[in-house]
View 1: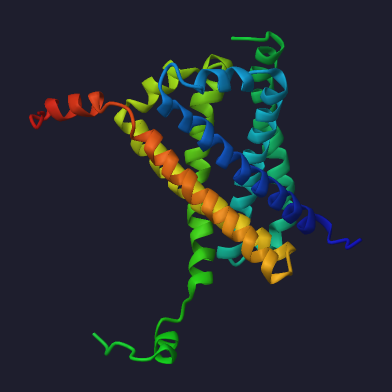
View 2 (view 1 turned 30 degrees about the horizontal axis):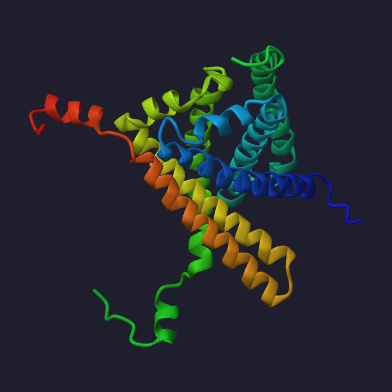
Length: 120
Length: 142
């Protein structure tokens, strides 16, 4: 296996989260598009289905992917457009991981009890 | 103004850019904007409220608001272009067979285009009541 150190894992995670978010986006637009069938259409049934706990945990993963992909994207922009970005890319990646965790913890504190409580 | 290039060769020399470079720049600009657009979208609809309380009434009320229509339209357009181009990068990186690449891209581009249209329709399907009120307030209402 190719051992590319931090930069390789930053790329792999960016790829996986990116593909996952793109596929989620397509599904999300399809779901919200169902509002066009009106209040008696399939929209509420779809949402009730998605409000089951496995999908709400999935939503936590979507949020984690968004935060990582966004922050690592900033790291890529800094690497591409500054003279010093490449030199500090490894440190910045650890910064991305720390910030992702730092943003993730309050989200977990807010969302996990809601999931444990069941329906809103 | 300099004379326009008359051949493809001249054009390539004149406009020292190409589609791949344009997409490369677009991914960075749209990515930067999407950080703010997506983070706020998630905050308002998933963190500030319990996501399980989202239902038809919530979405219909939201999508009847003028600024939400505009905000979400920018989000939809940028995210669709950024995401679809990202999927194209991935397909071109991992699939070597030209036929496989062609069909995968055909499916992804068709799906993305169709869902973009669905998204625009959903965003602009609800009444313009609040937009109308805003227009009335400045004296242009009908």
